[in-house]
Length: 402
Image (cartoon, rainbow, N blue to C red; front, side, top):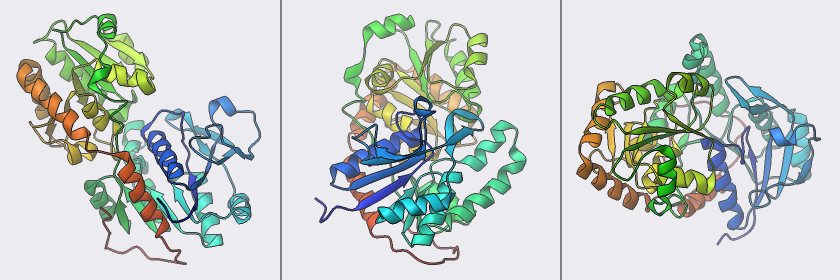
């Protein structure tokens, strides 16, 4: 148990009940820190169901996640209209934090709200830790704005080098930020809820809705239906798999700008839309094989959720798969440039049910070791050991907090 209660402020453009990896991680983080006795305040944009209300500091609508929440105006994020980027002045945030001073601030996103929070924190000399949750500079290539990639990377470098520490979930991402010129960079990984995500959630009735029986192959992808997720590879891989298993079905859980086009081209695919909580867990566990072709993740919580659900997984050797998948032991992973290898790995699993069964069992066993409580305690130690520094120049060194 902690020695004394601390006030921790979390600044983010996205937060539960929104569905994405950042919101999910922050939900787990807030819940865990409050369970350890800390006082949590959250600063975020107003969400869809809150629009039209005034932006004031109030008791959180989700009391399990925060003690107080400051909701602010926002505008749709380009490419992600379901999310907002927050609009706030550093002066307003400084006034808020002067009245109720945090011991430390975690800035999870680098938009206008994060920038205002960073300026306010520097004015009050409060230590700030930032999180690198999204490869925005890489995403620009998928939205016809690749010419902005260097500019975005420069901004991210400038932003993160004004904080005391930047946290990333994997060693590979730590090296990527080091190469980008960001320093210091620490590692804080992600956990998985193995009580919720479990093979015990498998539902024969749901499989029947999909049109598959226990002998048929249900192939699933969970995530945003968007260009940066490399869904064309998931589609082409599945079409090859259907030559082996004509009754196989592709299950797509999630929503996004590509859904309409995919549904028009592939009306036989199963589009389940957004799923949450136990329903999401039921969808995972009722499938057999998980295709994860994305190359733009900083982590990818869906990888560990699929493992916990007892699925055979095919992914590139990157992000969460790089950290947690051992090829041909608890999943299949291939080099980032090996598209053919990705397809071949999926075809091999479809053709070798004994291998698939072995990988599924081992994936579940390994997921049981990926605990949230220990990671929350680690985050607490990282944040509360930070000390404010007036100025700092980016260096070549990065630190690893394991």
